[in-house]
Image (cartoon, rainbow, N blue to C red):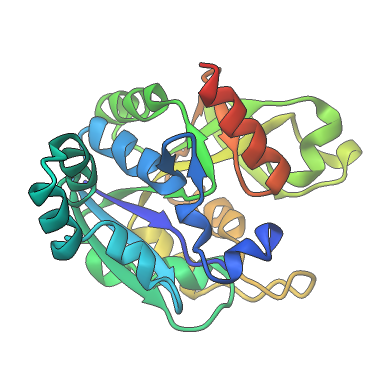
Length: 261
């Protein structure tokens, strides 16, 4: 199985710093956000990772590449501990980068990875959440047992559901998905936590969906709702810690949490 990490957005909530620094390289404690995600995916048993980027994110690719000049300097200064630390990133996994050519909807970004997926299922996650590593382990174990699409969910207070994709679960399968519903219209207080195992079929469904007139984009939630006609999509409700880092306030909180952990 391969994994896709969506990292093509501009990170406008983190401006002005993200004008020149990709949001995925914002440090949380001692590592960039995206390194945590790559490490957790590898620990779950997946070594082939596709990262979807966009223009201006060459430094993100460089972070996972070899830096000959820096390595030579560290060798000359006998700083072997630092040499080992920077070499971790280039040896973590088989990583390839594909670029979204225009900054349009998330569904389009996901389609850029379609030519690289040659199996029925793949794992999808995004850059701006630091998950507990155990979530990925649990997800892969569940998939090995069920061999069906899975969405990781968490339960949140009802008053916060209007900011998330919300699902309805019946008979241990997902039967409805609503993007950012008004609280009184929400089918539950179970929200999508941005980790999925999805089938290749999802690409075809995205390509055939109409653009939402309200958001002017094609929503992944719409494609997943359409997917329920072809597959049973299983829920995996987790109680493990999930730290969002997509605003300055959440980023600071994540740093504080991991510093004192």
